[in-house]
Length: 434
View 1 (cartoon, rainbow, N blue to C red):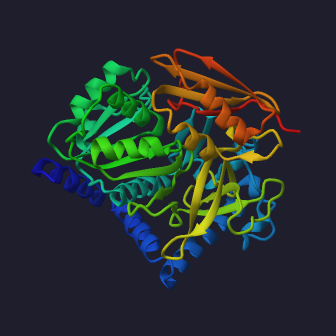
View 2: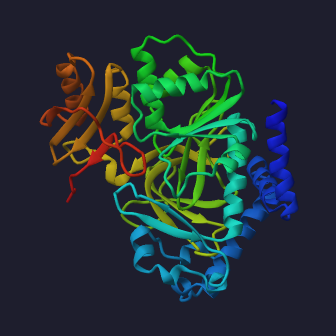
View 3: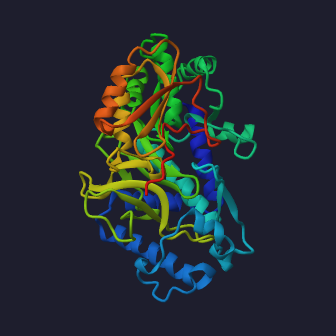
């Protein structure tokens, strides 16, 4: 790390120290809990954080005031975005009415905006979570960070703050060939750096490098973190080929924070952030826990948002659990939203990993989007710069996994549009299964 970057690192922690060292305290606790999961101290901290939150919720939050037994999380109802929207004021703790409330919001993957409020301690926890997890990915606080996302007037950092944090704000709203070329030139500087980006934007970059027959690049990257979307095997392989840097995928959301992240060791799965969240995997048709290895709904309890307690929150995503190499419960796989998963013609749920795996070989496509329109009706939107000659092969392969009676149509488009969030949905389900 250069002198200037080292200065940025020390300046950050000095400022935190002068403000009471709250982020540092959170960072130490996150590290202790995460790296000593089976110790008595880690277990006691997790239990205390959960117990304190539940007791706070029932005594200060109108929505939870009717809960008679705050000693067990099963006494609390499972909630979702709709319930929070419809009871928004009731979710606010009366303790924080006259204190600082920080609004966080997302455009909503279903197109409906969603917001919550956080207290300052929760925000500090999220900052500490971010620092811990980027370090786990190989990035060093203070070094250059290329942050690829949709930057708006609401989230754009001031020039001074961006300089202090050493962040390059790269807007991906129009990530065309010209913009990718400029980005590659910027990444080619000799200084040490990292990248955080939507997985789909990283795929666009790799497709461009394929198209120009690029050789491996010497960008001095210490980490590539893909967030918000599933990182497919093509993109993971291409990133390693072109950038020769550690690549990890992160599972997070705007309303809570970092929920899990892949281990840099390459072990399959995602390490759950047990330090800041209590995580359950519940069945699709009731609120009971799934069997080991069974897919279910990801339901999380945010241990540090006391301004607006979010307990047993159905994220809309699905996953299954496993124990990692250290015998710690982790996500074996995290799928997209259940709404964006599709069914075969027999009505059986089809993993988005199947679609991604089958599409990995069609590297000549710029973009694709798979849509289920009916029980046996499917549409492939394909964006390709040249004539696509493998249409019969693609249809044959997908009829094998969807069912021989599947009605699969190909539609060629110039662009797969971005959502307001900057993400691009590769799998869409417009079919309501009855």
